[in-house]
Each structure stands twice: as C-alpha cells, then as structure tokens.
Amino acid sequence: MKSTGRLTGAPARVARALLEGGPQTAAALAERLDLSTTAVRRHLDALVETGFAEAGERAPYGPAAVDRPRGAGRPAKVFTLTTEGRDAFEQQYDDLAVQALRYLADTAGDDAVDAFARRRVSELEERYGDSLGAAGPEERPELLVAVLNDEGFAASLVDGPGGPAVQICQHHCPVSHVAAEFPALCEAETEAFSRLLGTHVTRLATLAHGDGVCTTLVPRPAGAHHEARPTTSGSITPVPRPATARQEVSP
Image (cartoon, rainbow, N blue to C red; front, top):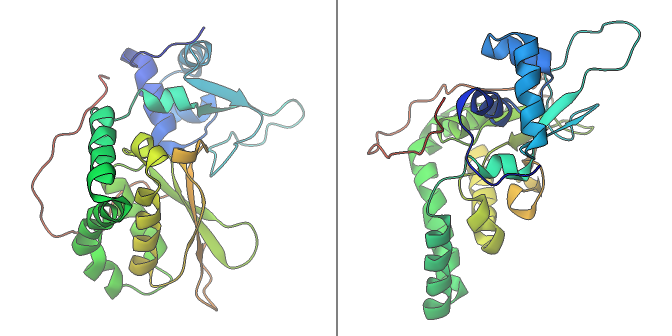
C-alpha cells in the first residue's frame, strides 16, 4: 500500500529519526528514541507498508547504526527512508518556487537563475566563512557538517572509499524538488563547499537526481589522520540572522 500523505504520530518520530540519522536497524532506532524494539518494529512495518521506508540487509549509502555482532544468524535489517518518506518532510511552496524560477529563466535567462543560486549559498558563506577559515583544513569538513545540521540538512561525515578522503552526506535537502529542475542550485552549493573548505570537492550524488543522499567527496590534507564520525550537532556560532519559520511534523 502506498501513501502520499503526511506523517503523524509515533511513525513520524521513527521516520524523522531515519531522516536525521540515516539508515538504521530497529534496535538502534529503539535506543535512539527510548522506545521498545517491538514498538519500533511495528512502526517500521507501517512505514514500509505505506512506502515511506524500505528494508535491506545493509545500508545503501552513508553510515548505518547497526546492532553489535550477535553470532550466527541473519544480519539485522537496516531501514531507510524512501523518496516518498522524505517527501513527507519537504518544505511547503515547492511548486511556487519552481514557478518563480521558471519565470526568472523565461524572462531573464539561465544566467539569472545561476546568479540567484550563487546568491542563495553566498549567505551561508557570509555566516560561516570566517569560522571555517579560522579552523585548520583537517577540521573544516566536520565543522561544515555541523553547519549543515544547523541549517536542517541532516548531514553526517563518513570515510571516503579508499584514500585520504571523507564524504559529507546530506540525508535531507529542503530544496531537492526545486533542484531537480534547476541543478544550478546544487552546482552553486558544491562551489560554496569548495570555498568554505579551501579545497576542490566532488559531488558524487544528489537527492535532486533521485539518489538516496547528497554525497560530496572531500580530500583530506596530506598527512592528516582523522577518524570520520557522524556529526549531529552544531559547534559554530554564525553571524546572527533573522529567525525564519520552518514546517515541523507533529510528533
């Protein structure tokens, strides 16, 4: 059974934990939410039945909170939000934003859309550029992840596939639907990451293109030895900005 509605109640808490923490087992979710494993499995079954989540034997991307080794037997299932599940958390007015950018492209051309995309991420650079610039190169990826979490992107930092590199994984993007039609938003964000980190980065995957996560590969400075770990809380003080309302899903 599929659903295109909004998430509410206890299933919404479980789904949000998957959104913010990435793929996880029922046991890991139960510990995170302080619920019984039986209750969490019931809610996960409901999310799978409605098409908001899917289960597999390993995480399709990024870090996964898995059970400790239990000896012989099948591994615990790892649950992941589907595209429909992430859609349930998207900000309102996506259609209006798309229409506005279409109008901008039609009346002022693609260059105007590119300029808008760069202007949008320049605000992030203005708020956090000095803080990241004052940090050492090896510290900046983790600090940027903290920034992205403050901005609502549900980010984590994981080891890259071989070599001295790490990956910044963004499990949520408030503008992914808009970026699907206007990739300039993703391109401008990638360029901003390069400037904030002081190194060239490579975007490997995006939610806007239908991937399970936005993934950016960041090279480590030569000689740096750092164990990447999921980052869930901010540690940087930005320049103050006006508060903006964000849509929340009822617990």
